[in-house]
Image (cartoon, rainbow, N blue to C red; front, side, top):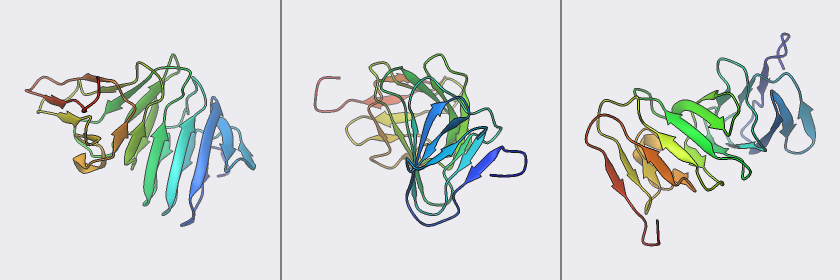
Length: 170
């Protein structure tokens, strides 16, 4: 944690699990508790950031996945909206339920758990593509498969957008 109490940074290649269980607070790997953590940053390993409810991080960076693989999982108890940045891959904001938005960057996977989770591309003026069958979405992990899951709604941009459903009932 920095001297201002704003950044929690796990500088390692190990996998870490961050749980946000209050505004600006939570746990890392179930054994490290943090408060005043307005910004969380992963390292070069696989880092998972899970919202335990309708909470937010108040920093300007919010969640930074580091140089490894970063996943954000929304809470099961509230619908989450991921606003996907129109110009930068793996960047945007996340709002679990009625919580304020938390910015994110260097995040390669978005996982929904509630029945109304959504990707919001309304700021995009170019075409976006979301494919539920492969889990790919524009500006999430460069549009590669298995990058989004459990997200049931898509808000398109102003251009011609493409939405492909899965083989199951969507």
